[in-house]
Image 1 (cartoon, rainbow, N blue to C red):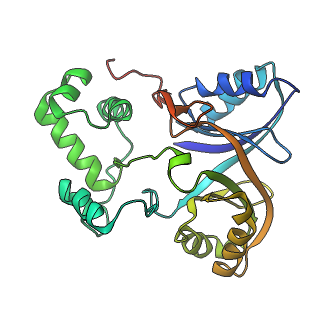
Image 2 (cartoon, rainbow, N blue to C red):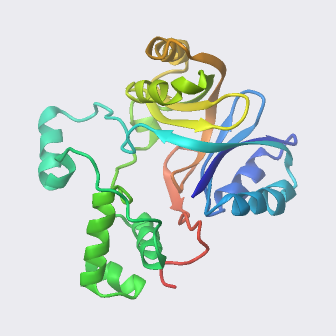
Image 3 (cartoon, rainbow, N blue to C red):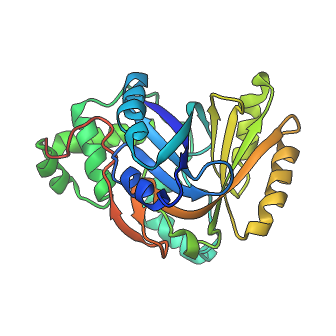
Length: 282
């Protein structure tokens, strides 16, 4: 998979229409209206660089409201794929949640991946994206396979880390409603160590190494806008060689992890992240 952060400048009065167009695209996983030099930032996933080029040239650059774009291809993803704890549950509640699914409490390294997902894996991933609670029988019917095969595939993808189950909380109810993106630079030899340290901060959501004038994009969740300077100080403390080059804040989140959010921040819908151009029932 090839993924990229794309910063988009829009003509005056076209931000909402442009965001709505991007929200409906399956490969666009996140769309945010932001402060700073750009109006929107999107996170895009494609099968390969050729597909990324085709999306930019044939789709994004043809949208009427788009004036300019900057594409930063992701060269590395660091930290846990699980969201950090929000401290919204009591210890007793957290223990009860873990008891419901004992495997979630296991630790240790994932098994080595067995290669990119084949057609059946792809259909399963899309089906689970739409309904993470779907049972094996329902999934087998949806993807046109036997229950034993589906169960075996799910077990393998979980063991290798290709499939992760997680709960997303509406930002305004999470205690950390403010999304920020910090563009930073570190010496090339420090990218991996700096990213690993930064990923351990409670405010950090994702750390990605990217192409362009800045080699790290760090997204975080804050309780208040005023906490951004404190967060950037934590970043430089965790990674002494890091230089903060730019910071942006989200004014509105239109889409996050394929979930469409309304103006009130609540989920309005879901766009299957079909980067392969298939459907779960294909």
